[in-house]
Amino acid sequence: MTIDEMSPVPFYVQLADILAAQIADGTLKPRTPIPSEAHLQQTYGVSRGTVRAAVKLMRERGQVLTFPGRGTWVAEKQP
Amino acid sequence: MTIDEMSPVPFYVQLADILAAQIADGTLKPRTPIPSEAHLQQTYGVSRGTVRAAVKLMRERGQVLTFPGRGTWVAEKQP
DNA sequence: GCGGATTTGTACGTATGTATG
DNA sequence: GCATACATACGTACAAATCCG
Image 1 (cartoon, chains in turn brown, green, purple, blue):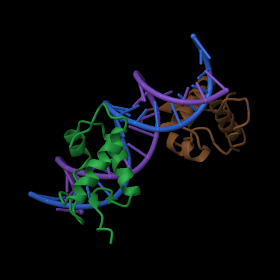
Image 2 (tube, chains in turn yellow, red, purple, cyan):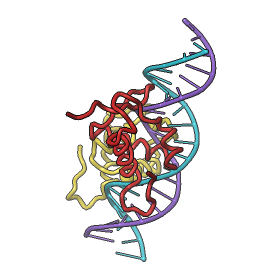
Image 3 (cartoon, chains in turn cyan, red, blue, purple):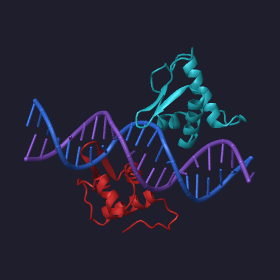
Image 4 (cartoon, chains in turn brown, blue, orange, cyan):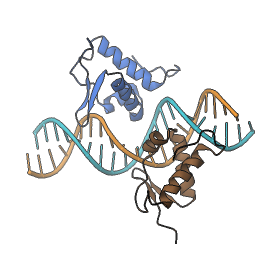
């Protein structure tokens, strides 16, 4: 999946949804790290600010946990 | 040379240009190391991130080569 | 070979400025 | 005015590679 430049949905929301889909389909598994901010930047062609906004949204959704210096990890599956 | 705080040119570009000038005028010679990131930080009063951005730019210009644990070295003179 | 110091690599936190719609 | 998006610049923390006594 990629960011749709033409979509009215903000880039950071699109990115959060892409990563959420990867969690849902098992591409990203609970207790494993998601790609770093720098990696997501490169992969999706967006700025770090946009990546951080996406990850912040996912934290607020309870989908990931962020640890300074260690990265952002997929949360336990919601029961 | 020092960083000009008032210049519209980003600090990291200014620093890369300062070091490039030192290579050009022989202050820094081919096959010798440039000062460490920590040293450049102190000397020019910028953060390590800014130093690293400057060195990255110089690598992209082919002016220096970086070796983890050994430092960054002035490249062979371009013929 | 080992331990400590040095140097670069990686990762996130935060703030500010600029531009656009 | 506000939200989005990008770039710059500061900081912290820790890991990995190298060097040297």
